[in-house]
Image 1 (spheres, rainbow over the protein chains, first blue to last red):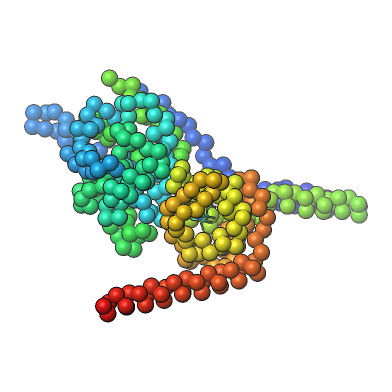
Image 2: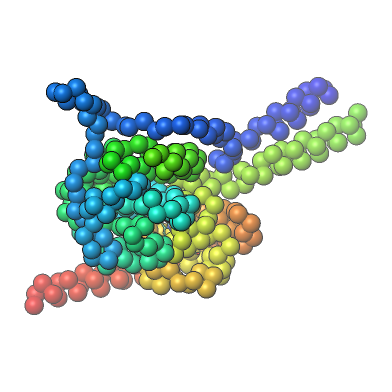
Length: 213
Length: 152
């Protein structure tokens, strides 16, 4: 009888340990020396390796100014895709962009580039008010709008997804990745922007990139 | 033997309630994490300047029944939370039941150090009915307006 009760006690003590916020995996932050260049590479006729690069772009930022690759000349930047009316993951991703922004506030060599996937609703004025509420300042952090097909098209080059889909919440399917691009327009790292642990690693990756000559 | 048994039973009940403490708001917690946390964050802190907090929110504390309607029908326009003004539309979550709404409110009322008690389910249902009638009135008015414009 006594033993039985003992067993009961032990069982009950553990039975309910399935709370949603029970601690998950312990994250080990891997220290890298060099970040790889991501994506499929080609070999040119002369034998040189060709790495995937971010193509030329021209979008309009929250101040109504045109933003092109030239604005990121010699700098690294973190890109993401979002939209203001997003009923799902965007605020979590923006929260992580904000974290990166604050972490590298004093380092001019890192910039941020947030693309809307919903240019119809997210015009310059909407982006301006959004950026101001976040206290996001140019030239550090650009929020850009522009031609919908160009915005959705360039998402591919950032290994991201941006597709209009009336059945998706808010009307768009899109990934919540943060993508790190170097000064040669190569993608060097990315993280799932809804996972703060991944972004902790990503921030370490940014430091490694910025230490590159 | 009898005393031993009673003590063991008491211990069992104690351990059970203790280890299940986190489970009190199980449904509210899981719906919160899957829907609301996208915007208000798992720790209820919101998003700087854009999405108001639920952790330590005077608005939540003082508008218990209105919050039921906010969950179902959303909210727009200025809202002041802890002295800060927010203005960004929140879409309603149309597919949660009255009971689920009560469970969500009870969870956020008691999470992250909040201590706002339990919502009164009877009054919550009455309030939701009132808001449903109000939403219907607005919907019909907008429809009439559209028809009026079409006929002009």
